[in-house]
Length: 258
Image (tube, rainbow, N blue to C red; front, side, top):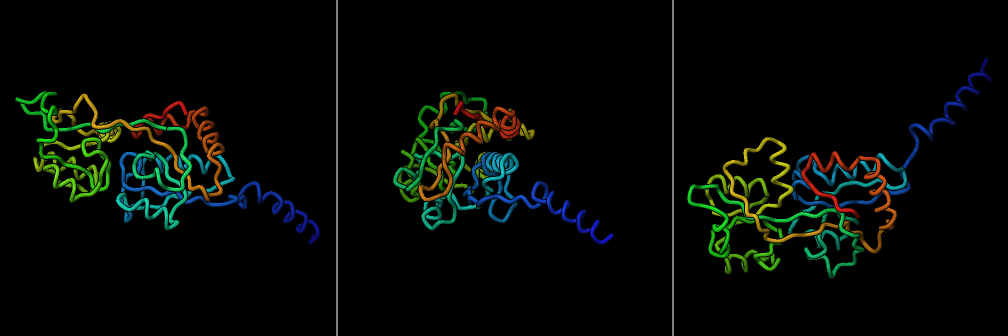
C-alpha cells in the first residue's frame, strides 16, 4: 500500500515542472514613466497601458524571460537607467535623450505624433495654430517637443515661451478645459484612447499638422542578457497570433511592420 502511494506521489511530482514549477531563466526590468496610453498611472498606482499589456503577453507567451515593469520618473529616466534601475524600455524614441547612452535600439515598433489642441470656439479654425509661439502653451513636464527643439529645461522654456507645465497629459487636458492656457500639446494615441473611454471631443479643436512625429522603439541596455532579435521575434509571434491587435484597439496606438 505504502509503495503504491510513493509511486503515485512520484508521478505527481514528475508532472509539476509542466504545471506549477516552471520558472523563467531570468528577469528583465523594464522601466516606464507616465506616458499615456503607453504607461498609465503613477508610482503609487497600479500601472496599466500598452506597455504593461505587451509585457503581460510576453510573459504568458514564453518562459525564458520574465519581464517586470519598474516605474520611473520622466525627467530622470536616463539617470535611473545609468543607476541600473532598469534594463529596457518599450515605446521610447532614441531622440529623447538616449543617443549618448549605452543602449541597443530596435527597429521602430510603433509610430505616434504630438498635435496641438485648443478649445473649439466660434472664431477659431486651423489658422489658430499658425503661430504657436505666441500662444499660452500647456506642456507635460519632462516631455520633448518639436516647437522647443526637444529641449526639456523648464527655465529655458519659460524664457522662450508663455508656457505652463502639467504633471501629466490628463492634467494638461484638464488645464486646457479650464482655460488655464490656450494650447495643449498631446499625442494622438492619448486622444484616441480617451475617445475610446468616452471622452467628448466635440469641444476640442485638434491641429491637422503635428508638432512632431516620432517612431517608438525598444531600448535595451548593452549589458543586459536580452538579445534584441530574440525579443523582436517574440513580438512578431504575438502579432502573428493576433495578440497585439487588442492592445492597438484598446489603447489607440499604431504598431509598425517591425
